[in-house]
Image (cartoon, rainbow, N blue to C red):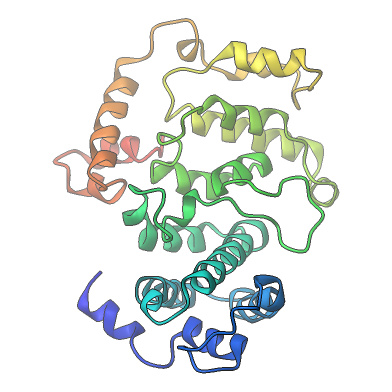
Length: 292
């Protein structure tokens, strides 16, 4: 983080420091241990929701920088149990608004720009793209999912593309399950009301094609197992939308080269920004960045 970033978040105007003060209604260094997070979670949700509901990408950038600064410095000021509970509630609220409510690729890109550096350590509080979240105050069965899984389940193509550009699918231990989420998870009723079935089907096919720009192999047995369990794919011709080179034929050499380069950049924490520094034509840089 640059010095200017640190300066931006210093001082009493930090959103989260101010929120702590309002939540506990006491000085930061004294916290009544008998309180539980259920006491202040609604206040956090309302306060952060007011900010995130209509925030521009620039405003969100300042917001997430406040969160990063708070997470890195407030631990020394607060009771450890309260600090962890507060961070968890804030993280859940942020992910809920970013992925379940706003669904904006620009907002997600800002989130990844600021937090992808922390993804190498999944235990880091700021590796929030790894964290599971729940759609708060919503009786939804998708509670407790990672952002990537949630986006795949809801086939948010533009947001999915951002997450994949930052290497989130390469980091998955069972990447075929992302394909399964795209292929089997039915759309929410309100989403189906807003978009016709043909649109949902097109989004499904586009999201699957996007994932195949990352993967070299898909486990057909895992997909067929879901059908054996009684689940029904959202499209009948699903096999036609999985390239043979992803499950039976040799994979394309160009794609294997893309995987090697992306894996190397990902290991260095330079994906996708490092692509621009490679001595390659613009067309090949776009290919590496999953544009085609």
